[in-house]
Length: 290
Image (tube, rainbow, N blue to C red; front, side, top):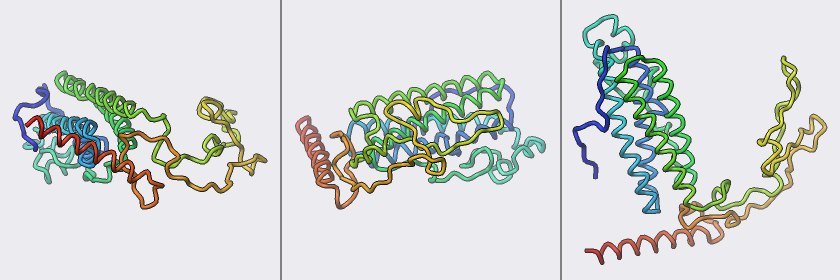
């Protein structure tokens, strides 16, 4: 159940309206990294989540993002106000002024319509949490860039509030992922091919205009990784020996989502049974409390 409270999560006040800046702000209203995308992504992940505790996390943050959308919308409307009756202001964005009446709509700063293609929802809790961490990082940097394009004190303070909440959410999603107690690179139920998983392919070779050739770092010669050269350069190339996928060989967590597929080597039914047992236990607890 949703319930709207009339008071904004953060009270917005601005000085001089800036329609051009208002158009920039639309990026966080109807853009790929904006508040509506975040609210829908986390909420729908929450609808799908089989773990009650992390479902609660997703719904909490998804609902807060709707509150952020309202704050961003209020800020945008204040900056777009001159579009209502000033020709020069309206020319800053005819789409907003003429088609939208000088108010907000589900468009980004370039007039592209919002789309559900922005949402990253896989139905795998650990994968979705990783997507959410990245989403919050993208939103944080967008807010930072918006702050850098205004001198209006009230706008900067509102954006600082919203930007800070992105980091809070990053921390919460990271803690939720860590609490699943899975190895850092354990994804799904099928382990990667041994040997091949450790090979970093040197696909960019030669010398650039500055005399730089290949660089070495922990991304290609550390943390268990080592570089292999292309056969074109006389190297051994990647290990392409066929390897039979084995469901159930990857490290999983009792909190993991039930894997999808008919042939999961027993992992699917086992995970499903774990979640069903938790649901029955929670339902029994609710009845006992009543």
